Length: 219
Image (cartoon, rainbow, N blue to C red; front, side):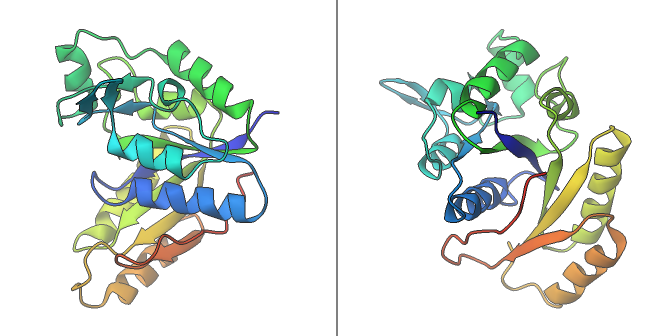
């Protein structure tokens, strides 16, 4: 078994990539598919008796069936809550593509769909020598862009979409995440992005609703 899947990126950090990834996993599982999540590189990890653990990676594991081993879900974990490439440099650790591909292959062999969550926004590097675009291309995954609906979202969304396509990756769709419940004319913002972005709107996530199940087929 080898899973089809998507690479989840965002317009920024803290805009709901994990929430959206878990919603995709729930959607696939609701259709009877075995679906797993992966967080290749994570900073801001907590030290535990069994090693460094990242909250986003743990959420992805909890939303997965079958649940991957932590070491495969999050091969590179760093304690400082800073940019991953800086955290990797401070840890004197090389985030290498081969290790990520091997971990991905182990997970993909056990499921039919896989959601691979990036770190921060699309252009945030995984390491000094490895970009998120290189990982998405190596894993042959189309990209899903999570857009945090807030002031500035239109510019961030359209610039991110251009960057994804300029990097030779396929933008399979985007998810609108209402991270600011007080934002006025949020629907107008979503409509404006939908008119200008060359990819379908997969779904809209409401502020702090129960984790939904997004219906999306990873081609």
